[in-house]
Amino acid sequence: MSLELKTCDATGKAVGSVTVDEAALGGKVKNRLLHAAAVMYHNNLRQGSHCTKSRSEIAGSTKKLYRQKGTGRARMGNRKSGIRRGGGVIHGPKPRNYVYHMPRKQRQAALRSALLGKAKDDELRLVSGLDFSEPKTKHMAALLGALGLEDTVLVATDGLKRNVHLAGRNMPGVTVLPAQEVNARHVLTHKFLVMDQAAFERIASKAERVKGQGTKKEEG
Image (cartoon, helix red, strand yellow):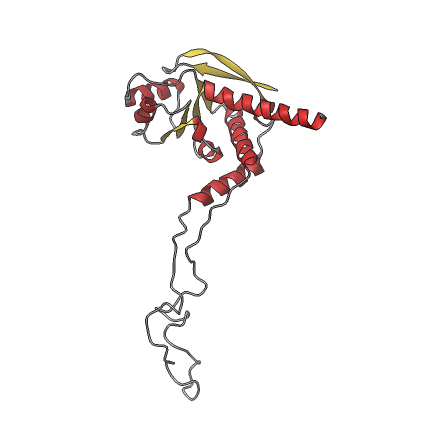
């Protein structure tokens, strides 16, 4: 199947459309792959700086609080025991590194699947030549207003566009990134995606080339 995506210019005026084969974006939305990618990216954002003190790190005497027998009370060790107020934490969290990585091809497939999901849900807008003449917030507001986008928006530019970045950085709910840095998590955590047409076509054409190379290798 093919998807027809409308395109506009940097002012929001419609200028045409682009037809994209769903197979170039994976053919279907792969929910389990998207979930795995989202978990990985969120894990990699964790600082891992949590730390609690065990009983060996608590300041205090190691003397037994009272004798073992003859008091009628339950036996008790020193005040640093984890079951007493102010004592150490039993099996508490310690600083650790949560970072891990999926294979590169899986990360790329997750991005394509996220793009396909946005396209099918009519939450993807393509802009031809996404750039502004001045770094003015009013330009970004005019573009998003013309496109009718009022929720969280990810703006993906073709390369680093300084004027676009500066125009969108003060707008709540708007994130501007070069398309080369966009991953599946960025797409999933925003309601709408505004993407430069050239960057989108490059991702789709690259997927087709990789698929073609794999088929040729198998035939040989």
